[in-house]
Image (cartoon, rainbow, N blue to C red):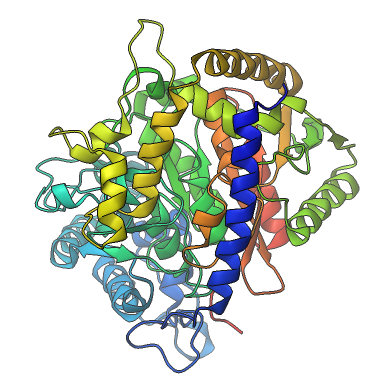
Length: 550
């Protein structure tokens, strides 16, 4: 599909703008690391408590068994001196958040007092001595501290999604997934930052400000679930609740070196978040788990999905040797997207080599031509009508929050003189939305191409295939620079409109001490395959790495 004259002009303009922006950013002095940071501090300090380094499953098992983790509470000769309490676990996480949150600004509102009260109730339950099997079945996440993206309703917490008009909105109930996690025994510590209306890949807004990457405070955490990525990487939480309509789980997971899973469409309910999807976008928005450890993805997904878990095959044992692996190094050279960094390509090559040598299988390298148009396909499908002819909700309406729609051009003029309550990316998205509606015939062709790509991808993957694909073309960029490369999210967004399950898996740190990673993609309802491969790669490449360890 050839680019239109308008698209070619836009691509050229973007490249020139990108080079100009990056040159300007290079001239600016580095931003301060934040209060509490020493001179030249770039990363958060590593955690000191062993309690903070346990996967959720093991932490819950230790609490149920009334044991202490290795390295904590042991006397000479290895004799156990005491048992760990849920209050002790929660206090350790609260202390960690208080230590590093002034640096990263990820937790925007805490509920520490309530969390400690809930921990006390857990300890009371444990003291009454119910059987371990009963507790594991009824409360699989008993006593596990979690955090929640601020876009989700958590009773008593703000629910603004970074929109100034909603700064006084307090949730009076829990989102469905939050309620299920609490019923499973998890203890929310607070809510975390996101981009304005969850539609940009840097988590910064006019309500809470900007969130910084734990590995380098001058870098972004991604978006829109960026606060979750930051708290997980900084060991301030072990499980996070995220949502994803264009990569909002996977990009933050990639930039922060943790695991994130976008489930198959329709498995996990999206109820109780703002903004929620309407029209055709209900098929693209996914709620899913973000975790520091791969082993936690499946149990958290089970809890989040509730009855919807029956659509998946999580009870099937996965034989890695029988998986048909496919690999694609890049999208084919889209003019709208940055080239893939060499370090990311090298990391993906190491994954291929390891799989081939360790499992004795052949990884098939593929080139899917339509992936070159990922951004255009995503944009067209996001603005298309559903089967009932209902149009998607306009972003400018959401910016007005049920009041008068925002006029993006006027808002841009206000922004230029410092009078707008909206961020520049949100205003730019409003302008882009207006432009997209001008090309009806072109959009129809792109929607058709998207459906054709979905069929091609399902045929390639079948019931036993996994595709290896970059999570993003670059490592975590510096603050503000995403505006110079606004469409790089296409590497994740395309899988939302295709409805496929995807797991972002960390692959250690690159030469600059920043996380590397890879996307694992399977056919619809084959989430169990990507989750199994993620656990396999975690063992091979180390998974999450402590920030500030060097």
